[in-house]
Length: 71
Image (cartoon, rainbow, N blue to C red; front, top):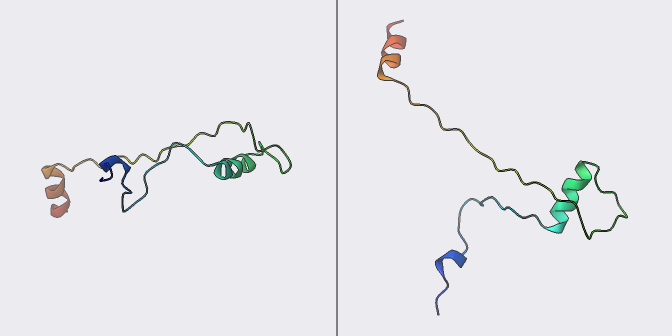
């Protein structure tokens, strides 16, 4: 049997994960002082995962390039 295309590991850059492991959640909660050493690691507060969104660059018009060359 072959592995389904959606289950294969993709090479290259890692994609954004919407779920953190317990250890990652503990680190984030420690940074914001919402969890201290000795507290129960079960029933942790939710931690929001923010996506990195890059804005697309606007294309310059042909007239803008000509004006800069004349100066």
